[in-house]
Length: 476
Image 1: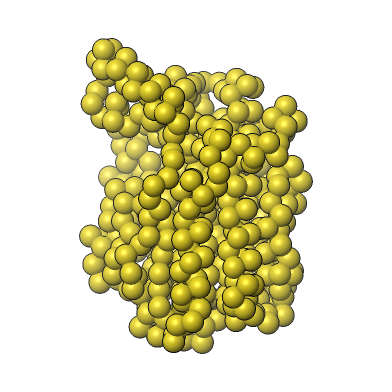
Image 2: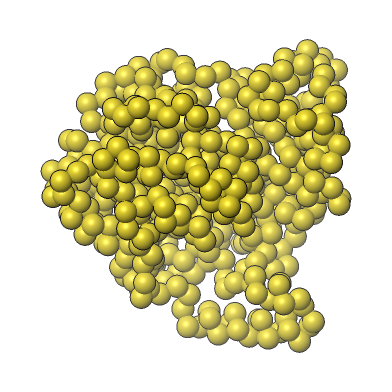
C-alpha cells in the first residue's frame, strides 16, 4: 500500500473539473483509480482529522478535537491502521506528516517517522525580516506567546531546486525506501505525508511560473453566509483565519466579519496555493513513476487523501476549521489493482473515517469490529452503489466566553448543523443549507418556517450518527 496524505488540499484539481489548476500527475492517478467526488473529513483541522483517519474512529471517540492533544494521551491503547497492518504481517514506514507533526506516534511504525533534514525553508532575507518584525513586536509590548507564534511571510517564491525543499527531499527519501521495501519478504504500508499546499506557500519558482496571477479566478462569495450564527466562525479562531494572521505580512488582515482582503492579497495567496498544489502534484508523479519502475504498480493499492479542504476567499476565509462544505469536502482517490471501477468517478457519500476498514477489506485481512467507519470497498467495483446516506463532521468553537461543539450532517440534498452549548448541552443555533439551490452555502435557511419539517428529520438523522451530549434537552 502507498498511502499519500496531503495537507489542506481542496478539490481544485483537473480530475475534479477545475480547469485553471495544473495537476497532471494527480489527474493521471485519478484516471487509473476511483475518484470520490463527495468524500468528507470528520473535523477540518490537522490533528483531529488525522487521528480519526488513522484510528477509524470519530473525534468524539478519539477525544482529539484540537492541535495539542496527543492521541495516545486520550486513547493509550488504540490500535492504529499501520499498527494493525503490522500485526497482519505488513511492514509500516512513514515519511513526513502522517499523524499531526508533533505526534508521529512511534507505536504505529516499524521505524521512526522520517523527517527530511538539511532543507531550505525561508530565505535568509525573509528570516531577517521576521527577526526584525519580532523585535518590533517586543518593543510594542506584545505578549511572548504572540511573538512565538509569529512566522515569516505567507508566501515565498524560492529559487532552490525541489530536492532542497521539505516535500521534494522527502519524496526522494521515500523512493529509496520504496526500493528497499520492494525486495523485502513482506508486504508494505508506505505512508508519505506532504506539507504543501499548507501555509506558508514556500514553493520553487518553476511552479509559480505555471500560473498567471492576474488570470486566476477569485472566490465568487467573499462574504459570510447570510443569517449564519457568529459561533460558526467564532470570535477567537475566526473560522481558522487566525492562522493567516500568524504571518507577519498578514498580521493586520481584516477578519472575515469585517471585509475581504485586498485583491492584490487575494491573488498572491491564490497564486501561492496553486503553486503548492502543482509542486505536490510533481512529487506524487515521482512516486507513481517509482512504483512503475520497480514493477509494483500491478499489486500496490494507492490511496491519496487530504486531511481537510481550505478556503481561498470563500466566506471571507483563508484557512480551514469550519463545518462548511469548502472545509470538510476533500479529494480522495483510491487505486486498487484490478478494481472494476478504476478510471471512473464515484458520487457516493464517503468519509475519511471509512479508510481504515476499506483498506483492511482490500488487503483481505479481518476488519476490526470496534471501528466507527464503514468500508466502501464495494464502490471500487460498482461506483453507482451507495454505502451510507450521510456524512458527519464536527468542530469545537470558543465564542463569547462559552464552549460549543458544532455537529454537521451532509446528505444528498442538505448540510445541517447544530451548535451545542457544552456547558448546558442545549442546541443554541442551527444551520441549514440547500446544496441543490445553494451549493456554495451562502444562505442559512434554518430560520425559515417552511423548513421546520426538514429540520426535524435532519436533526433526528444527525443524532443517529452522533451520540447526543448527555445534558442536551431540546431536540426538536
